[in-house]
Image (cartoon, rainbow, N blue to C red):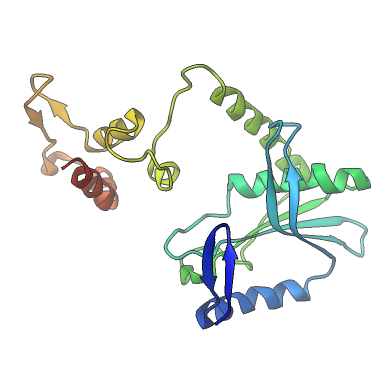
Length: 231
């Protein structure tokens, strides 16, 4: 029933929110090691000037002397399933935490555990008990990948890659505001023009293979929303 103001939004704490949080909070409290909560971390070696606030890190030294770093990210929304495996955000947080907090202490973790808690995904997403585990040597090349992405983005006329995931929260993801966004929808439909201007020919459903039909059905709401916005 209490209200909190976060990032300009007033949020009321509900029973549903509390119940969804308790499992993971109980798990966190049971973990050995030191907790780092809402820690500001920096990506300067790979992305100068880039930083973020890590939800939670847990640093624990096992009995065999090896260090285990757990990166725990909280995603409370409904309907947006975020995979843990291959996740860019968690790997960036892990590298940044190691660089910002652990290296000054002379610590390089032997094992890195990446976790996303998504309690309201209702069995459709990875949870705190389904981590992605990797070594520091396996994580480190991702820094070079981030650096390459940054260099590419800084090039004049850098290409834009539109898509469902990368455009869903963008304010310019509306018809006529972003050429890449519009072209992506046309590419999905595989629209062909007979004369290059007016006469549109749609591919016949009967000649499409199953993966193509499934792909279009999967993006049905997105395509209809785009057409509605144009209309």
